[in-house]
Length: 99
Image 1 (cartoon, rainbow, N blue to C red):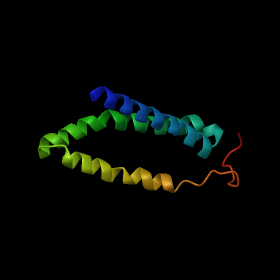
Image 2: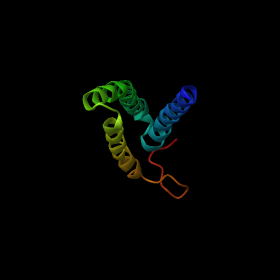
Image 3: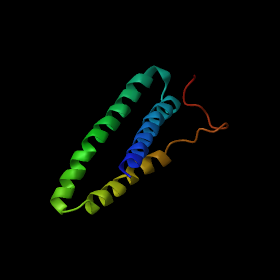
């Protein structure tokens, strides 16, 4: 079952990394794209690298992964709320920058 989990995790990480580039291109002017993308991708990579460390530390301190997983689920509400605040980018929505 571990290989299936590893493939699923890899696919999810790849999809998130692609989404960073797409949303950055849609919501930032092209002149500032590289700086905005670098800041967002850098933060994503730092969080992805540190999360196993703090999850393991919290699991060691509490005696199991339940608290760590609940905390991670609660903290995921922050980016979800920020994502919902993004302006809609449909056919009728104004573009924030010129292609």
